[in-house]
Length: 88
Image 1 (cartoon, rainbow, N blue to C red):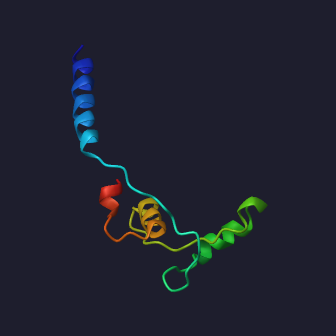
Image 2: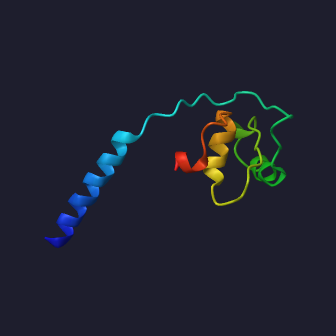
């Protein structure tokens, strides 16, 4: 019973946090821009070995600080007003 109460309490805290969250507009860049994107050479090597349906993609370098996914999203969003912490 103790775990149930703890779970209920945690769920309520999460629900309170969710009510403060607002949706993020995500309109990713559709074009590779050499002025702001660097090709990730290692990822490109792996991509060459992948199936044909991803050969048109261009892997882009992002900061490897443990926030790679969020850094990738921010790079595609092209919105300097949002941080990786906010996406998390």
